[in-house]
Image 1: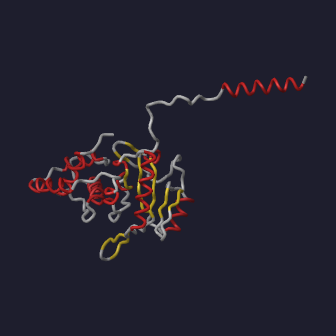
Image 2: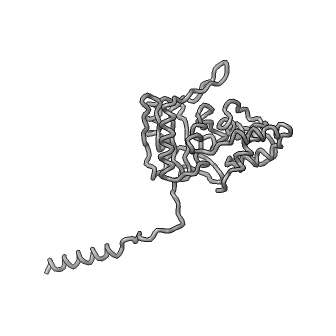
Image 3: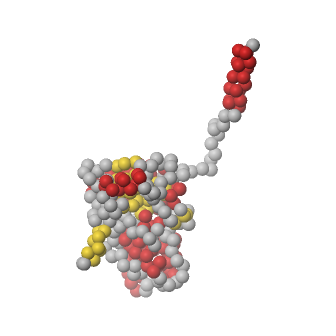
Length: 262
């Protein structure tokens, strides 16, 4: 009798489990990958310290690309999980990008201030090759838009400057990963803007259209200069002084002419 009761209970339990299963046979058409952005950083510390900080402290990244030869790549956070690399951040109206991004930290000491001025540390080509290969792999799996592959400074221009002026963004553009202003079009528009520069409001509007969180005050304030410096550092690293000149206007004009809406 006890055996029969036990069998009956087991059958009822299994039936209940079967009926409580979630049906996942139908998939909604309106959905997309959680990962929308890819953010590149430099660590500003050496490789052993970078590993320790990013794995044991309150900041993290999905990947760390070393600077020792041969270049090694560590995955520190699974792509399905959020890492703490972006902080307060904005791009094209999106904010708090930790939740929707993959972060790649690149071992690089950043810069040092000397009596002759600030000097930046270069990135070994072998390291950049690994970064490009990693970015290509991530982009292919998550279908990240080219205009959403960014530097930390792009999404936080008031407080961050990495990956800095020596990071070779043009190589990522040549690899087909990010947008880049066509040199011929820029040269044509430079001659126009040398005759008459746009006012500050124009620059602010174009910077915001490109994606930056930019004041819309019509005044060349410190915040606007910081955004200009960030833009120039990326697209014209030989001169990034925050001055709204003709070449900056031409580059912004070309880039925003081809910018997609979100």
